[in-house]
Image 1 (spheres, rainbow, N blue to C red):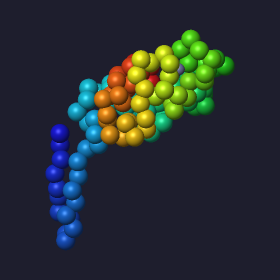
Image 2 (cartoon, rainbow, N blue to C red; image 1 turned 30 degrees about the horizontal axis):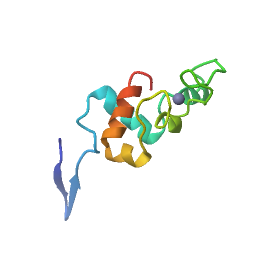
Image 3 (cartoon, rainbow, N blue to C red; image 1 turned 30 degrees about the vertical axis):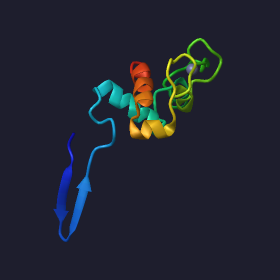
Image 4 (tube, rainbow, N blue to C red; image 1 turned 90 degrees about the vertical axis):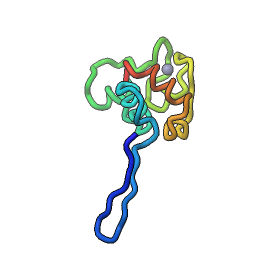
Length: 103
Ligand SMILES: [Zn+2]
């Protein structure tokens, strides 16, 4: 993990990458999309004009596939909280792995 410090005049700036930085790229990308709620869910794709379909239902259900829904979707064997996403907890990583190919 990259981290360190740099000096800018009289100020010392400490930096470190967010938790989960070392995950494989598809999982890291999925985790960040879930964190920021800008994943390519059906709801977002429709809002952004990337699909013409009116079917916003999540996998085999009737619940609209919104980004907040993805962390508690019954189709995913794992659930997590927004806090788990921010800390890259194991549950959040498993959810991110599950959706990595979709969002
Ligand atoms: Zn779902």
